[in-house]
Image (cartoon, rainbow, N blue to C red; front, side, top):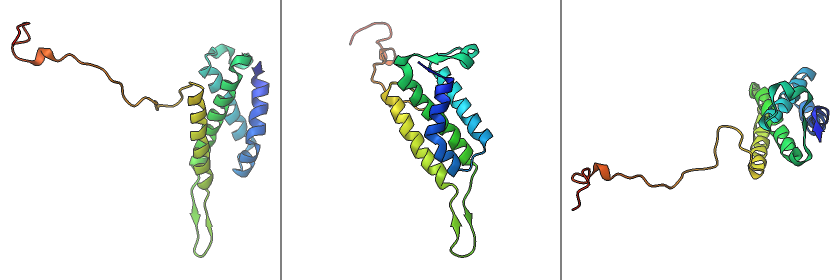
Length: 149
């Protein structure tokens, strides 16, 4: 079983370098991890009142970890989205948005991992179209009354 403490420990270990490199404050990382844990538990069907004490069964641990990654990266992406590139006269250029671009790539990987586990997140669907039939005989003159040619 995996509880909130284990999930928090996982996120802190997994994203320590990213948080340091991006210069996130301790409050920003704590909020990001808390949000990721809560959203992952919600996605697994945990009731709102059970979020603080919820534990995930061993059978759902891989799904929980994949959801933790997705929601942590999504939160980090939002934090990095407000950063912008700085360009000064001369050869100095600071690409602060580069971290955002890399997190976006990681987020796409996390979405693909979730899709592989049959978990749908976000507003996108993997289904492009469906085949079907639509009866349009009522539009043909003479067939509306059931008459034949």
